[in-house]
Length: 308
Image 1 (cartoon, one colour):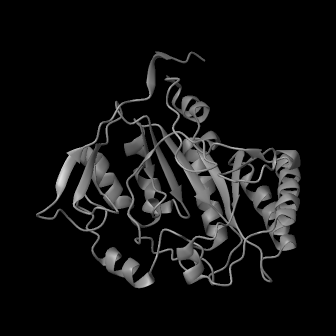
Image 2 (cartoon, helix red, strand yellow; image 1 turned 180 degrees about the vertical axis):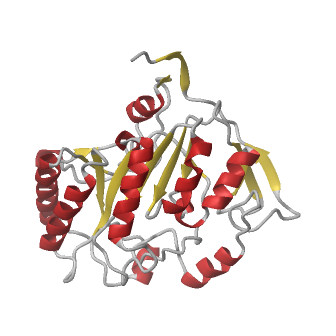
Image 3 (cartoon, one colour; image 1 turned 90 degrees about the vertical axis):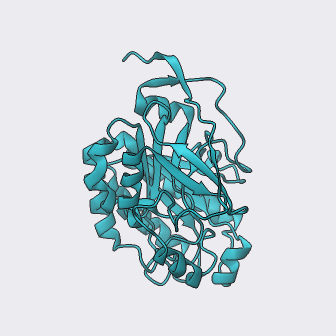
């Protein structure tokens, strides 16, 4: 199985000490976001967890603990966009994140670090021309440290519109123009560019419909063959391998305006104050009426190792 840390919050940026404590303990408890008294306990052991996949805007706090993860397969998605503090108020300066990206790549290898440039939106500040200019600058800086970039265009969820009412979908012509421009630039720097969960097919413009977490990727970075029957439909237009997310909604202090996993800033602040680095839960602790169920966990590994 694959543990995802996380699509709900930024665990490396804000909860690295808690995460490594869970690795040391060998398990984590995840509260059901819709039925809070239901808790799933996941074992965090290399023999059962095929890969730890991280998604972050700042991996720096986790870097000191990388040696403790060496028995696990690991893969990092690091999001770097051109947006300023008015959009991503608590994300570090982009040059700092780029330097951290380089450090992470040097420690793990460039094949284990992917750059995410998303979500893409267009307005009077972040114009099509601005995106192309900034994307080229980032390609130049990041190309020694990764060979992969994943892009996606902003989705207008109701929770996002509430926080960011002026946000608009990127029209089809702009999507195609940006895709073609990005593909040309990325190609010049030896970076493969893919889309993530996009309904518009951009392959004619050089951007292939990708799988952020694919069978081939996990096999390559872990050097282990996976079973053929591991695919599962997670959401529309997504063909990634199934993962188990150990994050918690409304707990990401990055407070990005476009984010759909934070519904309310006051709730985020309240939840963050309830974080206990020694708890088995990311936010809060166990409750008297909790029903804890051990997850049914199976490795995706086939019995035959790859031989390189």
